[in-house]
Length: 123
Image (cartoon, rainbow, N blue to C red; front, top):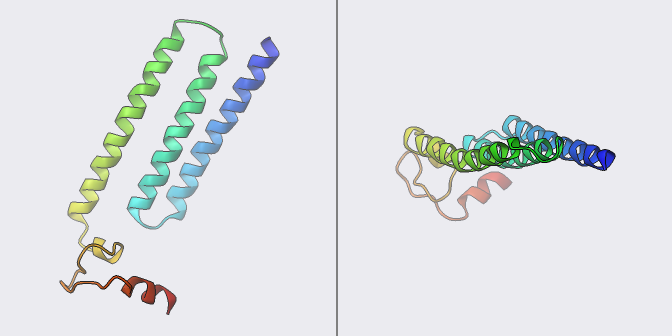
């Protein structure tokens, strides 16, 4: 039974590390701040779940598992709130946000047509 718990713990830690690595890669690869926040949030959620699950399985049944589960719930509720706050700050302070989104008016005040973005990308 000890070896089974060891391998499950190792697999969960590897999955958590992969989730965090994908979050770092996404934050490095994407250029737009909203995409970076999305990549970091998804990797953060998956990574925390896997690492905390591994920490719960590794020692067996202890009272520390309750604290770790409470930590997961705290992180799962605080991470989206902070990401939403950062998104709102970006939305209200970035003057060039309309260049990245089709539904906002352009910075010069001209309305953007629905197919204009695809034309800019293709040619």
